[in-house]
Length: 185
Image 1 (cartoon, rainbow, N blue to C red):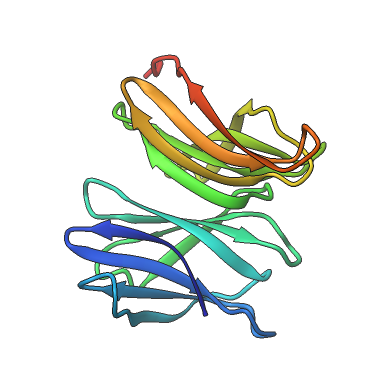
Image 2: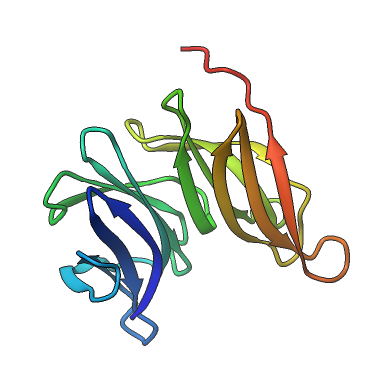
């Protein structure tokens, strides 16, 4: 099992591991110290070769899971669960998203980021609506070829995005500072 992107919530570390053998499933783990992990859900999801994930906890303790899939189908999934995070519901987002990551902005909106491939590979940002289970791309970052694995930080009113890309020849690491318009709601 390959552990991916640990997220802390209320003093507990949560992470999802994906199977690297022929079985192709993901497993949810938790840890009180970030060092020793115990299995919380043995088989969290197993359709379409699931692998990389990003977890986000809501103010009401709901956990969101943005999940990459590389099989058939290969569309990303959005999982939701209430504590103790043993029962999950999943919605298909209808788009492939490699190296997924997400962040909640101070105004409550969720930005998801990752590699999208329809119409050419690129690292993009999208609005994630966790209630309706939709992902709407809003910004293609300067990228192409081998590109992905964004990091997201909100700092001084800007969304900072780190990622790698090979669109300028050799693979390089990039940092974008994105100014987002205020929400209309």
